[in-house]
Amino acid sequence: MSEFEEKAKGRLTTRTVAMPGDTNPAGDIFGGWVVSQMDIAAGICAGQRAQSRVVTVALDGMSFIRPVKVGDILGVYTRVESVGRTSMNILVEAWVRRGRIGKREKVTEGMFKFVAIDEFGKSMPIPKEEDLPDYVTHGFDADY
Image (cartoon, rainbow, N blue to C red; front, side, top):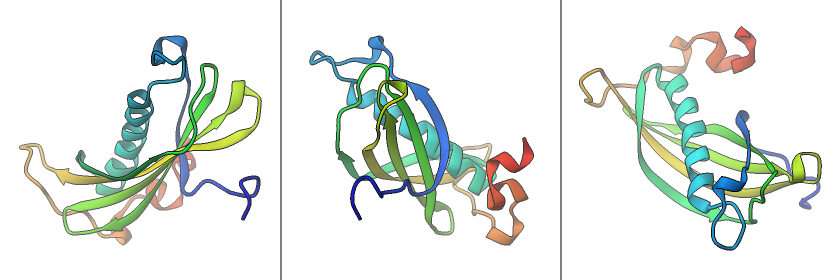
C-alpha cells in the first residue's frame, strides 16, 4: 500500500494546531509536544474503555516518521489493541494536514500501555466489552 493509500488506524480522538511556541531549536515542532498530544488522546481512549481513571505505565515502539511543522493540524487516532485484567495497550497514530489545508501524512506512531485504577490509585479490573456503554463500542460521536 502506498503512502497515498494508507489510512489511519483507529478513531480520530483529538485534533489541534501546532503553534510556534511548540518548536524545537531547529524550528520543527518539539517531539515531546507530539508525544504529549498522543498521550492525551490515548488516555481518552483508555479511560473510555476502562470506564475509570487510567494511568500511562509504558510507551513501546515509538516511531517518529516525519517532522511536524508550525501550522500543521495534528490529528491523533487511537485504537484499543489488547485488554488484560487491569491493563490495556492503545495503538496511537499521529497524522498531520500540512499547513492546515495541505497533504495528509502520518508523522508518529506508538503503543501506549495503561492501567485502570480506582479512587485510591489501586489497579482495578477493566469491564468486559459487553458491559460498556454504546458510545465506547459504536463511536464517541454517537452521543453528540
